[in-house]
Image (tube, rainbow, N blue to C red):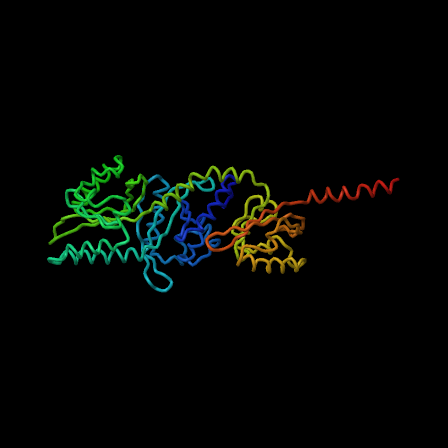
Length: 417
């Protein structure tokens, strides 16, 4: 896998950002290969991130998806890369403990390392799916009840932690639960009894699409989950992923129920990745020293092009290796190896330690085992709940040679005199 110097800064910040996300995140190219991934993906695949890079999704036995679902995922990746819009969808996963999990898959075409790839997020919606199934069953049961069904139905809706709206076959809102009202900021009287097509919070440009889907739903064709964007009463724009289903009485369609989940923050994250890409490029172009990111186990998680040039290891070779086995001659300088190991134990717990106090000069080694002097500075950064170290290493060979020359020059002159 080739490096693109213009994108390395982006990749550094991108890796830090996606490791903060509890969902599993991967970047997959058109051939189904992993280009980047966060640590959470290991919970699904059983692979460490560094072992996933370059591997094809279809060839990983550890993925507990069926062959059909794997092929469907790759097909959707390719469709998105060709410009098609693919709504989020659910697939089943067989977990390590044998249980069945439901995974919601969303994707977005992005530019990464100079290539157009697919950013895929795997979100565990097992509890939501089970809850929706239970809610649907409870709603159907309630609908069949007699005199007290209306009260029980409303009570159940108000207990749900998601926005739930019901409409009749004319598109008139017949109910909205308490959570939905709180999210929108409107009162029940402002929404119930109104046609959804005339609601001011909805974007006018989206109405033709919603009306087309509504007509299809009335004919018994429920669409896949889709995004609804609207403004709350306070003026804030929110994005909700909406699932719809039919309400039937004695086999006849009498209405529609829509369950919506707020995806505003996920959308904001995707937007920030795009907006910051130029900034990442500028940072990458200005870095000439080796920049290395090390986790709490001393293992390399980022290795920039300058590090490749200075130490002789390609990025793929450096990932997953401990920092001291890469750049320090442990056999020749065992005391340095011991000091680093001891210092990292404290660092993993507190983010501090002797190596976090200014610059330190070390004798480093290259891949060919040749030695040279470096100046190393380390700074702590907390990603998630774990401490990482960002190291900047400068080759000071020329500086040392100049110092030696300056020191020896007076002696040589004295001898000649």
